Image 1 (cartoon, rainbow, N blue to C red):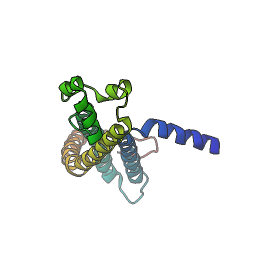
Image 2 (image 1 turned 45 degrees about the vertical axis):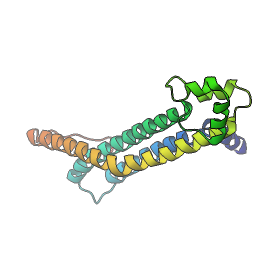
Image 3 (image 1 turned 180 degrees about the vertical axis):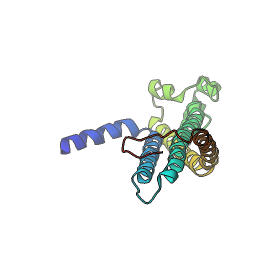
Length: 192
C-alpha cells in the first residue's frame, strides 16, 4: 500500500511541482464534478422530493454542473496562459532575470516579443537564474489561477448557469406540456 502511495506522491510531484496552477485547475475541476454529481444523486435518491420536482431540479443541476466546470476550466486556463506568456516573453521577471537580460544585449532586444521564450533561454544559457525565474513564474500563474477561479465561480458562473438552466427548464416544461402522455424512466425506476 505504501508503495502505491509513494508512486502517487512522486507522480503528483513530477506533474505539479513546477506548475501548481495546473494542480489548482485539476483539483478545482474534479471538486466541481464530484459536488455536482453528489447534488444530483441527492435529488434522485431523496424520497421527500416528488417526481415532478425531480424533473424540474435534475435538468437544472445538470446544466449547473456543465456550466460550473466549463467556465472554471476555460477562465482559469485562459488567465493562466495569458500571464504565463507575460513571463515567458520577459515582460514579468524577477530582478535577477532582469539583470541577466540587461547584461546580454541580444536578449534585451527580444524581451516582450511574442516569439521570445525565457523557458528556452533558461535551458540553453549558462548562469541564467533558472530557479528564481521558475519560482517567480509559478507564483504568478498560481495567483492568477486563484483570482480567475474566484471570478469564474463567484461572478461568471452564476450569471451563465441561471440563463442556461432557465432556458433548459423552459424547453423541458414546454415539451412536457405538449406531450403530456410521454413518460421517461430512469434506470432506478424514477418516472419523469
